[in-house]
Length: 296
Length: 322
Image 1 (tube, rainbow over the protein chains, first blue to last red):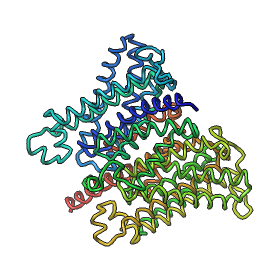
Image 2: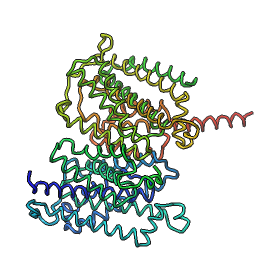
Image 3: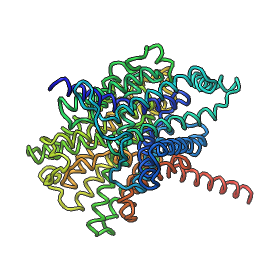
Image 4: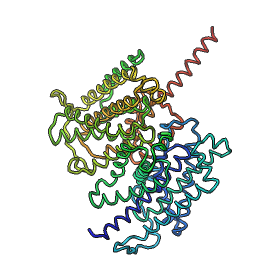
């Protein structure tokens, strides 16, 4: 195998890895403001892809409008989910919350199967299919769209969390809910916002991914699992670590699939998850003192 | 194990004995065998989740380990079904330790995702390891269960075999939860730190109950393939793990009787409704969500509430009449 093949593998790994990183960031946002791991996170990606398919093929919207409408729709679904299922619970146990998010993910999967059927759907790539030559390897242009959009989203997220009032309120809620409530932060709104935000991230990932790999109703769960792996490997509550872990997972998956075996593609991340849980459950990029502060 | 449980056990024995008198339909009898098989898994899962408060989303994985061990060892290597079942249970113990030891140190979501991941690993591997499992299409011709030369071929004999095992498992489990160990498990569910402070070895009890439930799932998996005489990955996917959850949720998580009731309902109901087949995930999701939001105690919780209300009414009435 020549250098160009390795570059090709590198790009496909980075691409899928950045999707994992987006899913993982979704986990992180909800976890840090509520202490909930939303197991329906992968379903938001799936819904993003599926709604984009409907917008494009049924309503014949242009791609840009499809993107905007889809992300708004998925954001609304995330908010609706929080409002109808999470908010009414008075004293939810961890077990109860897990069960509810699982139930919601199954329900979303079922509805998606009902609406879009069992077959795979796709939308065209954003800027044609002519591959771009990078050091002898031909890379599909969609890869650069994904990397560009995700990089932009990351920069915006970091800016929002660091410098804006709403971002500071979210971090305050994450650090101590009661204290945040006492200083006048509307904790309810923050929780609703974080569900909406992470659903929106999932939606973006879904629209970006669909032209590359097609989308079907059952794609959500594997994506959620891999996103969760990235969250744990990066260390829960550590955004930079999460993104790095997501990219790493994508790269490892891409190279193992190509060089060793493709049968076990969906098992690699899970295997890494269990190994990391064994060796360093606080995550590779977190200090164990930090991890002790968390609720787990 | 308490006086009321003796009465309930006697009632269960009576029902098991009498049912075949009325049920002559071979197909229905076969469904009842499935109900018993799922009840075995549900009892173990109820111990794990309802009593110790530990979540598992991967019990289909242990179910698959038992199922595939039995199928491969009896069909390809001509092992005796009981030996194969025991080897399967041994493998399940091994797997439970591998998943349980790292993740049981952690709580809640970590365990949920680690077990979910484990279940998926087993499911994907059973389709990918073509040389061992014949891949996604699976294989048929698995011999029937046999004990001491007697082959359980007819539906009736399988029915009695499976429900006898349910009864044994139930009595053993009831004895466990009404002992020191059971109290320790419930204390872990209540508050791990407090349990630890009271001298309960939390980690050890957690891993023990996890292994126990894995063994039960594995045995049920063995019975499953000997009943179907066929094995393929589709019987062991994530939906199966979710179905197990729904069974114990609907029956009421903190009750082994609820586990049996839930397993029976969710094996029989889809057969009568017939609408589940295509859209079963939609139904499962809706049922689970509705149950979690409006009936978190399950059916046994509901019944307890109703009987509590009725006895309270009855008592006030008799007092007023005096």
